Amino acid sequence: MTGGTGVDRERLVDEIVLLLPVLGRELGRPLPLEMEVLVKAGGAPEHAFPSDAHVSPGHIQVLIALAKGPCSVGHIAQTLGVSRPATTQLVDRLVEHGMIERRHDPADRRVVLVDYAPGMHEVAGRIMDIRRRQLNEALDGLTEEEAVAFFKGLKEITAALGRVPGEEN
Image (cartoon, one colour):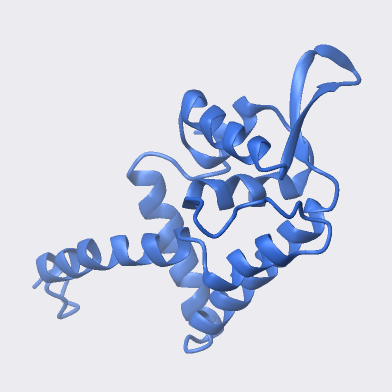
């Protein structure tokens, strides 16, 4: 027991270690509903992610990251907390499927930006809506104070483990 709270810290840490991969898998993997949105979305290319294509959590994360507007591969890599080569592979795959495009920055033609292909902004918006709904349902069992404490704790733990996605350290 530690801190007089009656909490067995070692057991708590063990439980967190077991739960974090589950949380990561559940939030990171494409949901069947998201796949349906990707494949059947109006404006999405018909060949986009055929049923036998491998769609990784990274592909979904790139689509979500672009919701803030066109950006460079380096910016996407920083946002996702992954290497530039890994991000380039994700972007290449999404370009192959006609979901995103590379364009020159009109302000500086030396800079290449990644953006949604026509019609994909709405698809990504629907994916974010699905994610928000899923997370809201999961948080429904918590009070507002508990939800805020969960977020704060998750952010602090993530920062202590190395990096908070979307923020510079």
